[in-house]
Image (cartoon, rainbow, N blue to C red; front, side, top):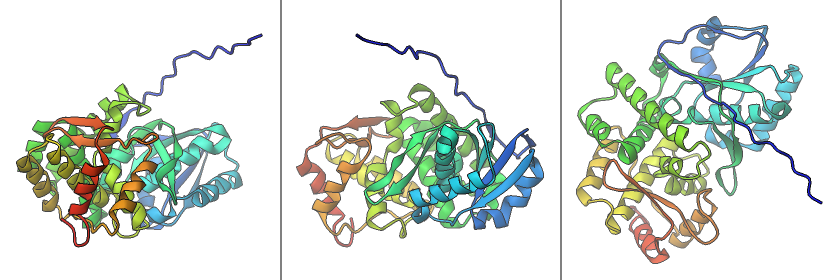
Length: 351
């Protein structure tokens, strides 16, 4: 005997992404704002002046990738229970990518899921992390290996929050912009080569272009079954670097910049990218003082760490590689000898 449960239905998780000065945000129920001390010190009063709700509670967690753990999620959830939030309550993720990832994950878990909105305050989170519904935390095996897809109800991107951003954080965000241009939009990459993103008008245009690019990819492949994996260009290498350095040496975007250089070197080796194109990418990253190399201590250990990547399966490592500039290749057919040859170029003092 077979009993079937028919759950076929269409769920509309569409949401707006507002780019520009933060407007009024009104909510009828309880709201918890998740942030960190640094963001709160600079911008919390601005947010609270725009936010109206039945009750507003502030939950603050330490700043840094090393705090992106299940222990921190448990702390957030306990504060939400302390404030007696219910299924009609709202979580506001107010900060960078770490806050957005953990806020979204906590919202997905609380009472089996409540709504949340993203108000990103770093360039990296504005152009990438706040869009697409990826949430989660790290563990000792790797980055973002525990999490869920939980789409926000809205995203509010106010470039004025970037006025207090340190130069390293700015560069880390630029790396994610370059990532999307290299893999999906050659004219955008050429525009980036000609324009300084430290100028306000150029920056706002770049944010819009990056967000539009990611939005189109997410629309086509929300759960990363195919095309969306291309947005992880540079990340296969970057996640190993971050794990090896315990998330304390590099910002995420800095690791991605190094990862792109490594991926480009591999792409050149197998004929997907020319040396001239790889040098153009490297030059653009260098303009924003991003690190371009990483001293691999143990090639075999670094190689084995690839197998913990979410995109890899069984004995196959999935690499996201540029096909020139403006194209991308997702492949799991590169032999170990070739990969280790490229890794050896970065061994010791780097490439």
